[in-house]
Amino acid sequence: MNPAADINDAPLKSLHVGVTAAMVMRLTGEEAAHTDPGRTYVGMLDTGAGRDMADHVASHWPYARVHFVLRKWQLWAWMNALAINSPALGRQVVVLGAGWSATGIDWAHHCIDSRVWEVDLHHQADKEVLVKRLFPVVASRIRMIEADLSNLGLLLSALRAHGWRADRPTLWIAEGLAYYLEPPRFAALLRAALTFHTANRAVVEFGLSHHLLRDDVRTRTVAYHSYLASQIGLPSLQAVDPSDFCLRSGAIPLAWADPSSMELARNGRALTFRSPEDSGMRMSVLGPA
Ligand SMILES: C[S@@+](CC[C@H](N)C(=O)[O-])C[C@H]1O[C@@H](n2cnc3c(N)ncnc32)[C@H](O)[C@@H]1O
Image (tube, rainbow, N blue to C red; front, side, top):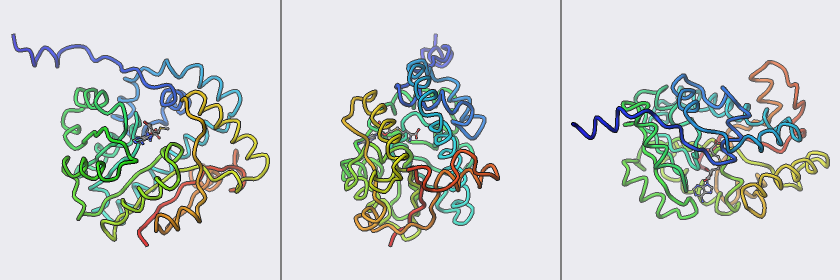
């Protein structure tokens, strides 16, 4: 009997996803992914751990679901627009703090000459096994790396060791990551990411510093972030002051989006968020200064 054939013939097991990733996937449903393979992958994950948290968030902060859906839509819309304007950018994509997201899988399917590197502290080994089982051909375009993004030297060595080329344009993605890194570290990471090539771009999502928020938005954001932090076991979630961030990272924002602009662009109407002040969530396309 061939043992390799045995492993490949074994039924696919669904993987248990961490509580916050599971919560996001339960809230976003189909919109957690953008391609059929991405949705197949998400459908293989066991999101049971996030059930209580998703129920709690949906009843206390119903706008959070809309945030997740909009940020995933905006990310995909920008990735496509950037790759159409500059095809070389779409061929090297690094997803920072990828977690269980379908972004890399979606992109590797969507853009057949792409190479994707996903980096996270955790989960990548399990995720790699599942993706190789589900999509063996496309999996060869994706490298999954477990590394601490606070350690730039190690990150860059790991990327290089997995075939990333610093001398080619790279599109860097940081969705849902800024909340976990101290702002100076996040800025240093983006400074490094954008430095290697003048054509490099980054799409980032973050929460605005509390002093920049309208009173009612600050109150609900603090309550929501405190709840998330308590579930993850962190003292707090990080927030970003864009002026300070640009100063420290040397990045130039080339485009901004907030939930009201995203809703307008996606749905033709801003319903949940009517103005930028209605939310502290922001997304930006960054380029090197
Ligand atoms: C909220 S999740 C976002 C996951 C994914 N980008 C998405 O939007 O679905 C944040 C991810 O950042 C990862 N992360 C946090 N700090 C990190 C660090 N220092 N190095 C690498 N990954 C980190 C976490 O493990 C987690 O998977």
